[in-house]
Amino acid sequence: MRTETKQRLAQSRHWRVRKKVCGTKERPRMSVCFTNEHIYVQFIDDEAGRTLASASTRSKVTPDRDKLAANVTSAKTIGTLAAKTAMDKGIKQVVFDRGGARYHWSKPKVSKEGKEGKEGKEGKEGKGKEGKEDKGKDAKPVYGKLAALAAAAREAGLQF
Image 1 (cartoon, rainbow, N blue to C red):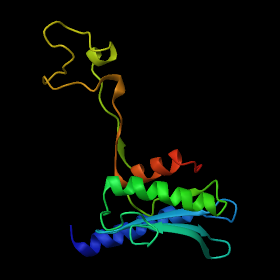
Image 2 (image 1 turned 60 degrees about the vertical axis):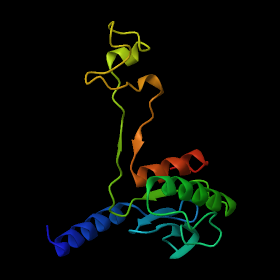
Image 3 (image 1 turned 90 degrees about the vertical axis):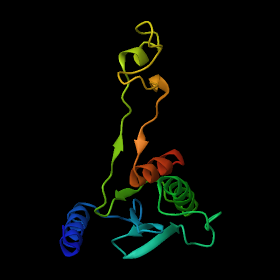
Image 4 (image 1 turned 30 degrees about the vertical axis):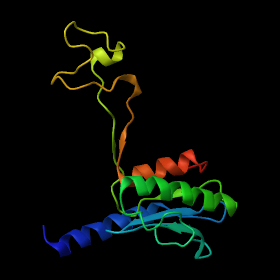
């Protein structure tokens, strides 16, 4: 697919999301932008046209900002930092704006042996079909960058 086509489709996805999402002073829009190198989060009051708070991998208040990049682990860090910044400004509820990016995560597959506490068929000892180790009940979902950032912000106390 041509670059111009990808950019046009991304722009139309962004417009489609923005048509439905609007922030107020009590419940601002949490806008997230991922570039190839950095992550930016802004809390925006659309009625007044102002940015109320922000956090990014480039800001000077970010701890270990030299080690952060646009990946899942950095997204978790920035999500927590953005939530703390918003809470300091008095923001408790936000409207999440994914900005045309894909919000995805995958639920781990649990086999029958994993559901039974890894006490399934004899000889396999808690292994799945391919003989790989099962994750069992303790398995955590695998998040994409956007979903990881949102999950970290929720854990830090923001309500969506």
